[in-house]
Amino acid sequence: MTTPAHKHKVKLSGSAARIPSRVPARRTISRYSSEKRVYEHKRNDETDCRDVTKFQGQDCRCPLFAHRARCFRRVLRSRPACCTRDPAATAANILAHQLLFRLGFAAQIVAQTLNIFLAVIFFDLFRVVNRSFARLVVFSMLTGTAIETVALLNRFAPLIILHGGNYLSAFNTEQLQGAAYASLQLYEFGFTTALVFFGFYCLSLGYLVFTSAFLPRIIGVLLAIGGLAYLTGNFGNFLSPAFAARLFPYYLVFPGLGEGSLILWLLIMGVNAQRWRERASATRVE
Image (cartoon, rainbow, N blue to C red; front, side, top):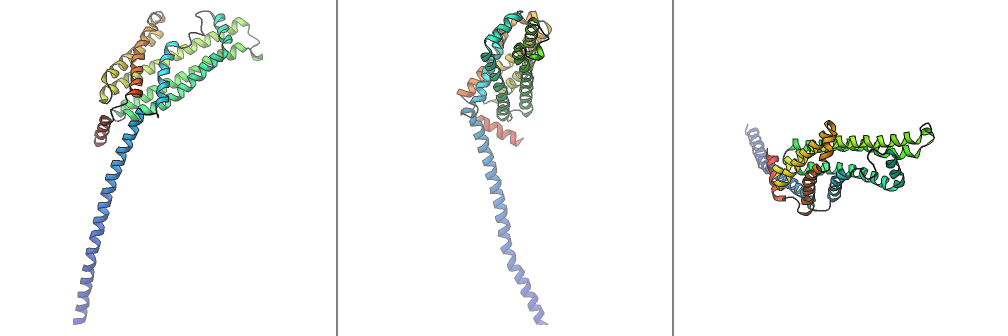
């Protein structure tokens, strides 16, 4: 009778001896998991900081310069090639400067492509302020870019029309010149439509800059004024072209100031990384 009791006692002591060896293992796993979470949190913060410091380096200068060039292109558009209400003179200018005309078309295609990268950059920068408005900035920019890209087909069409292939032999010279001129007018209309969306883009971006705390508020005010100027001038083109003609190109001064000041500030001064990090931490906590 004593032997089974002795064996039972040994088994109890053996299981009891194994329990302490398991407890440190659980504590070690728990401590490792917490340290891993802290490390990943720090690594995410460092990644966010590296992302925002790109605005002070070389990574986004090409899209930002393209954005600045687009501001000037809105003022210039295709006016030098297009002689108002004179299809014959317009056709002569295009045929006499074909290389320049093609280079202008290629430059605009490059600018539209870089707008996609710029939209991603702005979303990464302002998502810590307000994700909904950051998405609105991306949507407005990409919609305006898509409309302008499609409108560029009408800008290139005069070269095809004026060269007069065999399939155009049924039309005389005056008809071909009129068709080329009408194509440029359609491009102007498409460009004006795209600027309406860029107006909403400037309004949304102005709000984000004004409430960001890591960029000067005055830039946000200028962007908002520029957005209102875009909407006023381009809706004027739809409703009263004579009234819009009086405003052009003066109303484009305000968008130029807003967008130009933002681009120059990002290229030269950059963002306040500490305040950006604070906004990112606050957004993560919420």
